[in-house]
Amino acid sequence: MRVSLELVPRNADELSAELRLVKNRFPSINTINLPDLARFELRSWEAAGLSKASYGASIPHIRAMDFKADEPFALIDVLDRHAITEVLVVTGDAPGDGRLPAGGATCTGLIAKLKREHPQLKVYAAIDPYRDSMRGEYEYVRRKIDAGADGFFTQPFFDSRLMELYADMLEGTDIFWGVAPVVTDKSRGYWEKRNRVVFPNHFEPTLAWNLDFSRQAIEFARQRKGHIYFMPIKVDLTAYLEGVFNEVTV
Image (cartoon, rainbow, N blue to C red):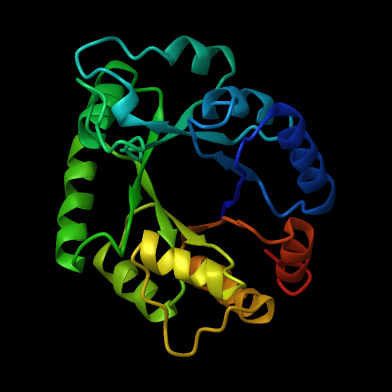
């Protein structure tokens, strides 16, 4: 089972410090995935180049809307130079004015382009259980598979029952199951408003509840022969990972 940690690459110094911490303290983590946030100076592929020094498995997120569907993929030389062989293709969030870049590729379009022109790349896509109905999301996942997606990273789950439903629906699919600690009411409100999350009735915005669920998710991924990734936003990274891995042998 692969165990990935999502680190937000705000700048090179901060990312390097986090990579050293994780490498030295948490050997169960064997993969790093890196979102691409245009508001920060360090882009995901540059961050993956830094991460490769510590983690051979470093997966940058690629925003499809930033690339032209009818032009050569501009990053292939960068990926090859850093021996990056895996990417996660996402649509990308629209700018603040809501207008998408003219001529930007769709998620399925970029997946198909990468698999056609650069078949050496392993291309992941996203599963979002809160975006649409379950049927709608399943159909979108099938279109990504038809485009050539090799596997998926899910949006974080907070309910093992919902994970079971998706696992049954997508049996045989290579999946990194996402977990993100939500430890304040403000953070919970953000997830509900921004990502349309419906938390289970028994959810509590505490570190203890989130650690318990994280351990359950690890066991779930193991039983389903899948993988796990952690997205610790607005929580002490060391305290969270110590709580997870002191209790669980991965």
